[in-house]
Length: 269
Image (cartoon, rainbow, N blue to C red; front, side, top):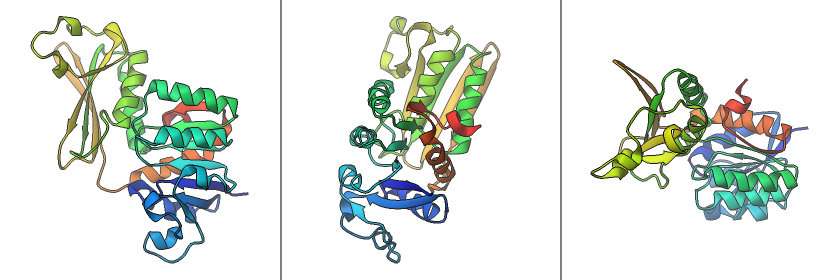
């Protein structure tokens, strides 16, 4: 039986790329889309094509009236947590591609998801190569003590750091070696220029978020050791195509557990 999908953010940048991919995958059935601006329309027609028979709703709560197995969310930071909670409270599993949520948000979601026996997979980036950036960075952190992250995105991006940068920093803070750089509380001048901190003490990870025209998304892990440096970097292109395969993989796997798992690497192997 196909996995029944609700796609929240169905007419957005990633949503538009997911719709045909879901339609062309025999193991999925797209049963509803969520888009405030196109509510009440047929999703195919809303995207400029032929009628598809998939209704568009104004809210996740409305869409959840249709029986579904998994909700995929690519919306906005201000609404994603409420969307996810609504879905897991209905017993629907969730794939979260929207950025803006932090560790405490996911801890809150985990409690509700476990209570309702729903699985959640959240990733700052569903690109396979961005997932490899995280994997290689965590591996390098076992051997090189000093590391900082540079997070690049477009001038209009609302959240900082990006979901990719945040997820990487939170994971890195759990495994990195103690830094040898001067502690933040000893910095003079303008301490904020040392970036935002994830983690505590000598194991905290500093993230520097740049927001500039011409960037889509790039994340750079910069390691420094005496007389040598290592940079591991991922750059996203101008289309949403790299996120499709990883999102569909997550939608296939997310019914396999209860509670929150973070990062596509949780199911990559």
